[in-house]
Length: 206
Image (cartoon, rainbow, N blue to C red; front, side, top):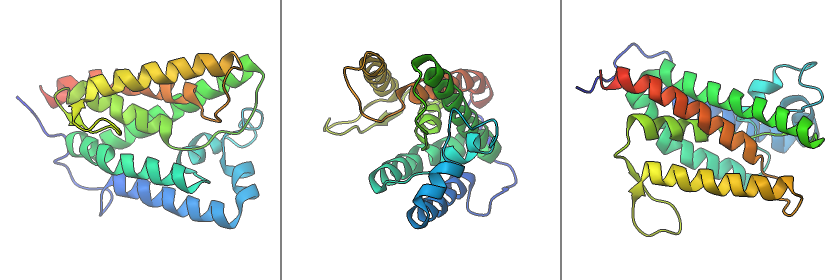
């Protein structure tokens, strides 16, 4: 039997996912107006995050390039909204923030392992966690992935993304490819989302 965890009193008048999207928009505008200051104070610096611990959270919402902001917001609009429908605001925020933090800590560990301390930013790790959680609690969901012209199962899509990111991570670690993408944050965020999805599945279909 499916049980909708979202049937509780709302914390945010327009929903938690829309609140997350709004924060991303506000910080994107701030980054346009104050690019250097935004990266220094709000992006995740593996070197300075202990001095500025808020970076662990603010970096999840920060985007400085239009394509990065647009793609993440577009994906989150659909997948975040669906996860919030199933888990409610608190459940959605727990998955989003936990996955984002897992992605950030994964990136910090990778940065020290590779002796590369470039600041990281963006909601991708959190979004991978949201998708991973959905793959566990809504395994029959089908999604469209460009350029595939037909819907595919979300678990197959997650597998494709994970294999691609892992391959690119190995190439980046071997200095064969440089893309500026924090693949390790995607993967660690995904792992967190899959784990939380497995735990939530019993509640959704209890």
